[in-house]
Length: 181
Image 1 (cartoon, rainbow, N blue to C red):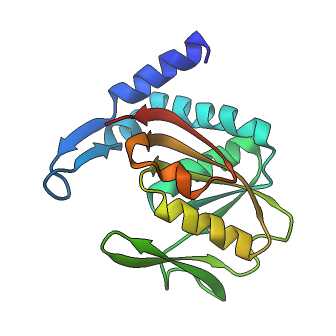
Image 2 (spheres, rainbow, N blue to C red; image 1 turned 135 degrees about the horizontal axis):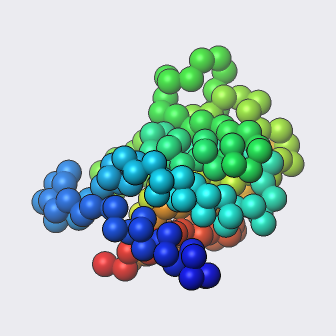
């Protein structure tokens, strides 16, 4: 990384607050709202995500709701490519396709509009946090179900101690911040 990129990452890191015991005891929640409140640092964040995304040559960016939208859409705009929202069931009009995935306490489902991705299109997944990897792995399956080729996944931050990238071994993974504990 360049000194300029390191400087941006330091500014990003300084604006992410840790909230202990949220949403339950023992969780150290990473609150990105201070980052979102800084238009300057948020713009730098989007540009750095776009810089890391550009060499992958994606045709589309897909991102899960809700915080993935905050980063995925502006990165897609910066790259001049389309954006595909991935939502919870019942939130998209028209015909949808879905993937159910396991959580530590049950299951969840993500959906995408049918036909949103054409066979062979290169898809980059973007989200705010890579934790256990369940959500992003489901997003990968959803894109592939339509014939998309998931070429990578980018994140604002990665909780590397949870090994989430192990669930998406076939695509390039990058994150701006790595949280190791």
